[in-house]
Amino acid sequence: MKKLVLASAMALASVALIAGPSLRAQENSGQLTIQDPAEFNAYQNAITQTEPATKATALEEFLTKYPNSVAKKTVLDQLVDVYQATNQTDKALSAASRLLQIEPNNMKAIFISVYLKKTQCQRSVDPATGDSKDPQSCDDAAVLAQKGLGVQKPAGTADADWSKMTGLAYPVFHSAIALDAALVKKDYATAIKEYQTELSLYPANATTTGQGLVDTLNLAEAYAKPGPGRDEIKAIWYYARAWNFAPANFKPQIEQKLEYWYKRYHGNLDGLNDVKTASSQALNPAGTFTIAPAPTPPEIVHGVITSTPDLTKLNLEDKEFILANGNADDAQKLWSVLQGQLTPVPGIVISAQATALKVSVTTAASPKAKDYVVKLNTPAACAAVPPPPSELHASEARDYLQANGASADVSAIEELARARKILIEPAVTTINMAVTQDAKDAKTADFTVNLKDPLGCKDAPAPGFEMKLQPATELDGTYDTYTKVPAANGNAAKAQIVLKDGFVQEEKKAAPVHHRPAGGATHHPGHAR
Image (cartoon, rainbow, N blue to C red):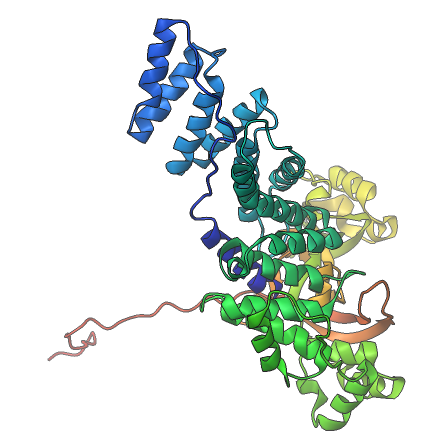
């Protein structure tokens, strides 16, 4: 679910960012006086070019030849415009950065830099994790945006021009600060504050398209995040607002999240259409707006237990909800039918550390390999386990195993001294999974699957990998134990569920389709006609 909505937000953002904004130079500096005729002619030649590529080349050549020209600021200003117009974002950012070096408070250069850095930040988001792969761009955009909010109107700039300039720039600045707070710093309270400020600066109709619409959805996401700032009613409102105005191809993903939170808070979907209608008419909910809460979690659980003929048919999230929130009798009714039963575990891999070494030993007397499992002294990520030597002799194997494995397990390998061939591979014995939406949002495991047989690191899933149901890659295990974890610090109650005898079913590739040649009869060999 998170992946769907995040993908929607990023895709909407890409639509909003197709055409970059532009600002006029923030001051009329009057006429330039260039004393050197050659420099003057080069300047005139550069700024009067009409073909963008030719103009950009001429402007850059001017700066190279006359790096300390009195016209440097004007030339860089025009370079920003040319590179923007030709969609050369890296060069536009470079020109804006150079302009800031000679005029640190140049609002146009700050604005362009924030806008382009923010765009880089948005495009770096990993849909699977919700994290930025380029946090530096996010941070840079936020720092420059904060600076831009403090820039004073330059002398000589008309109030109307400054108002127009800041009217365009300030919403982008607040959006950049909010994006950095949410993606990089995980400071959702600041993200909420900045998104609200940004949206308040737009005319009402500007929040129904473009960046205003994107950040309405982002505001909903921020309100839905775990922690003390979570406000489910406001999250529902802004999801509904975003759903109302999203393009048709984005509505289904947003609606899934809207219905999830509404049903979670209210208990069912009754009244959701009224929320959709109200949110279509106003950006923010009225002070009197409310949604009737659902019955208490134990009441919901009891209703499900008494009305569900076959409790095994419940989905995995509902089963965890019952174990986490039901009274002792209701939770035990469910657990009595689950314990010892096999189940798939769809969700996101949180961790799959190497905890053992798989050892395969072949001797001259017994060419059939004998397998052992040696517990690692220090569990670690697969990539962090010291690699075994590429060719192992008995002494090397013993040294490696004794250095990294439990001594009792190493001593149990009787064939080690007379081994002819030894294979050692780091292996995973436990996979920790986030199954419920709360666990995925918090990036914490709520299911622990202890594998029946160690899984070699080369075959183990990486953190962030999504387990699904066959024919996709599937993780299965048998219900073993569970522990209730009470609600705390804005996080919902959960059940920590442990499964045993786990195993991974690899993705089943579709069989190739063989087509009979068009128009031809089928001939069978060995049969004369």
